[in-house]
Length: 259
Image 1 (cartoon, one colour):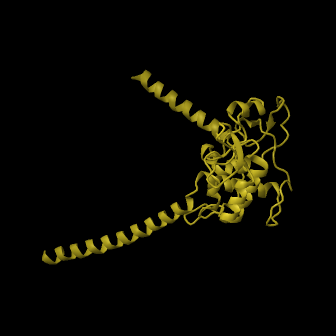
Image 2: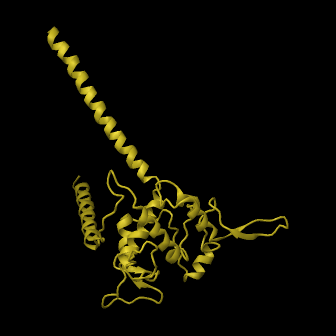
């Protein structure tokens, strides 16, 4: 019995030590005002459109978004480009199709029904072009990373010179928000890197927020309708609770009267 209690105590002690160690290593992420947070949260349409621009001009050369189609850009709840704008965006990309009547593959302008064009033919080609590292698909990246939008937003702004005593291999960069602080992706953002069509100043902070907002929508395209459904469900439950309360009150009042 004593040995059993000692084992339990040792397990609890080690678990507590591990928890304290993890807490000590945890880095507090940068904070910003996300319009889509909360029960009534909605996506900022302008931010979504700017975020798509940042993805296209900066991220898409390495990162795919294989679960998105160009028609999604015009759907309700998303960036809400007009159908003509979405068609023009799709047509600006060359899509591999085929075979044709001669049995050969060919390229054509993209259509709304096409998936986002992949930057590489396959995973091996992506790894070969990035020093052995595979750039992750961005379709659900926000959901696949602990910290979600705050982590992605912070990571994009977390590049800095490594502290004294830390040596990095060639092609590896220091990022204070990256797990282990080492990342193979170089800093991709700099002030004025893109020119927003709406005149918004393209600072690193603004671009980080916009592209993260776009990635959040990509991972949860039905977020707004889910929020609306949740609100309706809460209102329904409140009304139902009130009706049940008064019904029970009326029933119990009869019982007291009979007694």
